[in-house]
Length: 495
Length: 137
Image 1 (cartoon, one colour):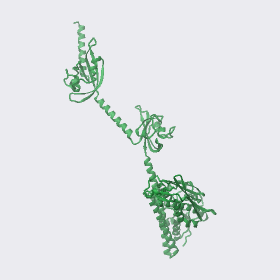
Image 2 (cartoon, rainbow over the protein chains, first blue to last red; image 1 turned 60 degrees about the vertical axis):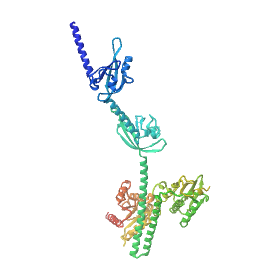
Image 3 (cartoon, rainbow over the protein chains, first blue to last red; image 1 turned 90 degrees about the vertical axis):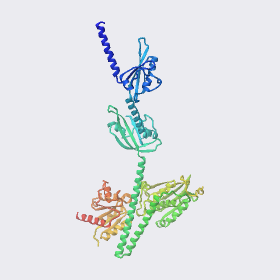
Image 4 (cartoon, chains in turn brown, cyan; image 1 turned 180 degrees about the vertical axis):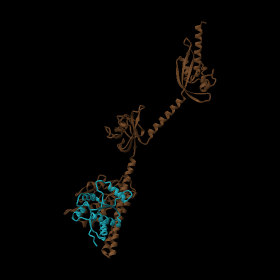
């Protein structure tokens, strides 16, 4: 052997040794199988983790199977002489599962005949685990996103909604890529002072309130939060907008506020009554002290007046607080108008006010008679007060009540030509505990009237102008939409 | 009996007017009543009072207007005014009422507040104090 050949052989041995070391030390499993799928050789890591497996069937070693695996990549390599890959789960000698990526390649003789197949497993157990966790958290995130009790959207700089949660999709006319202002408000251009635009500008979160329109056109009061979403480079790529539906809270606040006004109004009335009572006692006491019968009488009258006022106030309050639904009895509004006129006849005569009725005597309502009586007496009483509160020389005052049928409704109008009201007073009529009448009013009369009308499924409205008088119009359905609880319902439907 | 001091009581509640008149008259003051801001302004113009007790919670909002009007007129602006009102804040305390009116910047602050129901001694004390201040000016 020449010196060169010796050197070459030594080099070749060195390379072979290096390859063997490499084969052994490479941090994955490598084995070489024959056509019967027996393991001819395997690297050290394989021998360590799977035991002495030389000569064994690979399916038994790697999977504990008694037959070849379906879709076996080794078999495929033998069949077509090509490389193949797959993902498998194998079990080491202790039975621990390992997720692996499998690559096979043929080992051929110089003629191209496949002699053996090399199988290489890359352990991806950790990656698989991460993938699972990622999938889990994505699912969890998607669930949170969808189930969150608010409307969440992610928008680009053109306010296009690029992501939306399920709740948003359910409540609004949503389509992917639709503009936020179209979806939420049916607008054709961005809203002024858009919070999303502001967050795009400086990246800072914003919070505000807004009213959206849902797919049925109903207003939805929301508290809006925005937050910037940044790409890995720190640039703002999108803005998340979260709208929390606070409609019910707002409605509750409104109810609480009107309750507060009501209580405040009652307290105010009670204070004035109390003041009157104190005044009466004070003047009565002066009368006793100075032995002046006229002072005693005046004081006593003040006490009487204010006790009467207090009882009126309390009756009205109790009426307002009453929960029970009204009975449905046949009621003739025309007859009730006459009863109410009789009540006020003396007062009207003294004040020179004419009481006129134009009432359809045939018309019958199904209603609670006491309620309709108190509705009429409140409205007629108000009309008389309106005439009394104006002192215009030579003007002949009148209060006129009309009762007529209009389709399936009874129309009751109470009209006066008294002082009338300005717009401010008119706007407060039904909304507040409100009286223009000082000691003569409880501030509850029209609230009572409104409650009666509402409970009977009707409406009440007022028209007025200062110096011209007022018209209160009540519309009551002849057939109440609320089922009556009275036994006499059937005989009430007079044509 | 009369000390010669004239007081105008403005309140839309006739019973309250009667009460305050008798209370003040019984302590030597000459009292005149007005049921709303317009009547009150006429009364001030006819016979300038030394002090005004003004109910602010009257309907027709004329109480505030009357107050603004007299504060804007030099010949009346120095008349001490006591705000009497049944409207009190959430706690029902007069302190809330004071804050309420003080926060309305367009109205100069009044000389005193008195919450309904009126305590007669407090009313008389206030009247004496304000009239004494007025006399020393």
